[in-house]
Length: 267
Image (tube, rainbow, N blue to C red; front, side):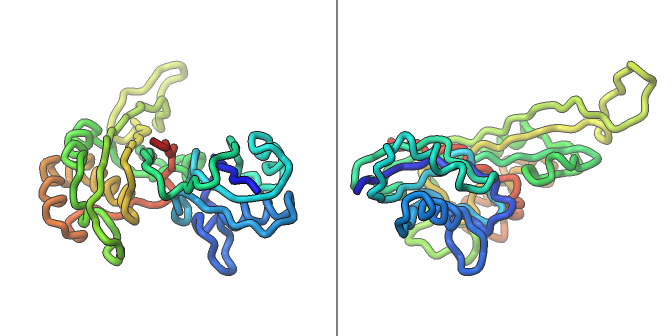
């Protein structure tokens, strides 16, 4: 018997989250099914992050125990043909028998993707949150600085969250803007139209790094920074939200489809 670690990437659009739910498609359920087909064993994977319905991942981590003779580093090649196209193992290896993906010190990185512009792009609809107005990325970065460090993030978690403490450490938050070359206005052939709020679009990524996060924490942080980016709140108001420990003071929970679990690093 050996313990194998998997790095798992998936498109969360068609799944009710990572964790197994009766009668519902989940990422964990598909992994268990593929492992049973491969090994003939009843295997229950253990995931590092139990992402919500619609959330995507480039690098979630899972482990399982098996008596298969297939070397750990070869298991990705054997598993991928048995998985749906929207789930892929990007790496696999054997680890120590006592390694547990949720009981180790980690650094997790999430990204929240936003597309702005007059018209939502059909190619972005499943993987970003569309906003019909431009965002002030500088103001968002200024606001984000108030959230870096060890704080009580009760204002930034779902109201019914049941945990021993709402104190968490955020190691960094950045808001990166990429200007798009897409314009939606008529112009003479070969001429580039002038930029304006109605024709110019942005691709924005909010990147959040931390040791661990509360339920919906990254999505609420993203919703709050979006409100700042729309000039609904000044950046310094985020400090008041944090200190209030009141969920109703923070922004909306941003839609799940824009959220990606980028990577998990074990320290």
